[in-house]
Amino acid sequence: MVVDDEKMITTTLSTMFKLMLKENVIVYNDVEQALACEELENNKVDLIISDFMMPKMNGLEFLKNVRGKCPDTVTILLTGYADKENAIKSINEIGLYYYLEKPWDNNDLIKVVKNGLEKKELADHLKDKYKEIETSNREITRLYELLKHDYNKETESTKNLIITLANVIEAKDKYTDGHTRRVAMISRMIGERLGLEEEKLNALEIAGIVHDIGKVGVPESILNKPDKLTDEEFEVIKRHSEVGETILKPLDSLRECLVPVRNHHEKINGSGYPDGLKGEDITIETRILAVADIFDALYSDRPYRNKLPLSSVKDILMKDVNSECLDEEVVRMLFDMIDKGDIERVFE
Ligand SMILES: [Fe+2]
Image (cartoon, rainbow, N blue to C red):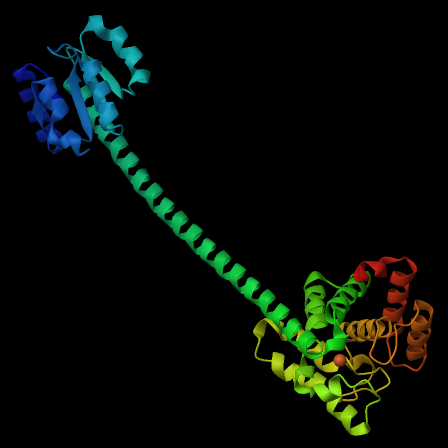
């Protein structure tokens, strides 16, 4: 865009730019018309050359207004010698790209305009790229939020599911009140002492809560029987660890718990159930769960007896170690917790 109140100048410049730069040129001899034109309103002007001395508004004011509307448009001011100082000041003030003194050299002017247009093209290109990056960033943020939301939702529903499973078993077996929660806590505390990694500790804790879920398959008359169980009744009870594994199998988030749930009644000497596993075939998580389970059963009131004193509990557990039923290191860790008073936390 060329803006000058002298028609001769706008015609000369317009012809020169069209011929030499092959650009579209629009001209205005009235500065107010120029400022209100459609091209500026729509931010379609790449470069403006404006005269300084014009009626109604001088070139600096005009270009200042242009900057407010179209901050990316490149602006060049044509000044008389006397206005040189004002032009220099305005370079920073209105972001003037260049000023040329009258009378100008045509070659200089063409060069300046050409460079100005290149600068504008580069700036537009960068702006487009910036917009692309911004769009990508927004999309990444949106996906991240979505994943985070889904993850939270999944974590939340898994947590609720575990609590529900624990409630199911506690509602069915009235003598296990709080047992699953304590077994979970004790198992985790032993696991921490043995240096198990966080993922395994979490799985162990969950296994502690759900380890007896298979008892939902045992009739209440057997489960809550205050007298000694018959051999047949005990056989029914023994099925609970396998049933538990079957119940939990479809839940992907609980797959780490399946082995300890199935094997928590196995014994190192092979006399346990359901598979009679021996020694190394019983994982450390399972050994921990077994010790925690037996400890809590002995240290809680049962229908047929009151809870045993800690010294008796320790004696029984030590006997189980000596007969190779329980893991010695795991039991020693539990004893350490008892001796240091850490176990009391579980019963608060
Ligand atoms: Fe059990």
